[in-house]
Amino acid sequence: MRYSMKRQFVFIFTLVITGTILLCLLANNTLLEKYYINNKKNALIKAYASINEASSAGDITSELYDIELQKIRDKYNINVLVLDSDSRMVKTTMVDQEFAINHLLNNIFYGVSKEEILLEDNGYMIQIVTDVRMQTEYIEMWGMLDNGYFFILRSALESIQESVAISNRFMAYVGCIAIVVSILMVIGLSNRITKPIMELAGISERMKHLDFNVKYTGNDRTEIAVLGNNINEMSEALETTISELKTANNELLKDIEQKEQIDERRKEFLSNVSHELKTPIALIQGYAEGLREGINDDVESREFYCDVIIDEAAKMNAMVRQLLTLNQLESGSEIVNMERFDLTALIRNYIASSDILLRERTISVRMEDYEAVYVWGDEFKVEEVFMNYFTNAIHYAQGEKIIDVKLRRMDGQIKVSVFNTGIPIPAESIEHIWEKFYKVDKARTREYGGSGIGLSIVKAIMESMNQKYGVTNYENGVEFWFTLDIA
Image (tube, rainbow, N blue to C red):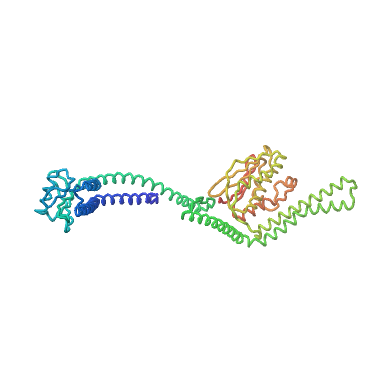
């Protein structure tokens, strides 16, 4: 991504860390030497106070005080020279004692340049001087003690300057390492921050295409986790809302299309019912009258008459129930509940429930191992559509006796097809098979108790969900199909 947060994190943190280290180097280079000199100046003042106190008490000439002077030299790197009022040496830790005495006397009698003075007090003066012989800078304090002795304290600045240089180099090395380590840490940190953000971006992208199956799975307690949980809740709310909207939309479309056809369908319904029930009613009436009049007195004949009456009554009952279902669908009195469900599982479950019937008729069912396919539709009505297709395939399967069930994806939809080997549907019957009570092979339909209403119910259900359906003839069989929107 051109404007990736990860890149911005790395760039900003690297810039901040580099700037901080450069600022430290600049401060170290410009202020550290002054800070050292100031500390050295305070050390000189402390040493002066110790020497002045010892000289006033008369202890400066003792061997015990030699230990104190040694401590001053070792701790503060300060050398000491003390002269009495006659310029005779009282105490010293100087290596070049003669030079130090001359230098002190020159300062006392001839003075020094004001530019070299760092601090001037009643009893002493602190200044920075350059040793011409050694080409070395020193910070020194000289003056007079309270008892009239002259003194000079000196400390080389070369060690301070070398310490500053070493400190700068060390900080530069450490700074480079710190920058590299910080960049790696920032990259890791940015990955940890941006990874859940990219996950949320992916979830929102899929939600944009109405895929609500994915959920944020982070288990931390950060603000991103709160956002992820809110997106999960929003996804569930959107799925519910879209389901309700689809249901309402289908109902609205169905009402608009069917309102003008209600009266005509009622007339057609009454006409078809009276026609289809005429034959079974006549059979029931005829066989019932024969039983009453005792046309055949043997038990076997009476049982045959009773079986016919029961069979015809059962067919009438099944027909009436189918007609009531069809009437509810066509009149719009039955709500189509649009929901999201697994179509593959529905089909597999129904095929499994038909296993006994398939084995009785020695029919083979072929279906690939499809993954779960989530669709929008009324799950119970979609099952009824598939049941009608599959039942017809069982009854009409001939030849190899194979039923082939397929699921094909196309342009945001899934096409479900049920093919059975057998005799193709006559061309002149193709356009009529969806009509109520139409039977291609009336003898075969009556043989298994068909009423000619099943495909009419399929038509009504698919149109109630605004989906496509159809039939395709092949040389070796027939394929019925329908479509649903992929969720």
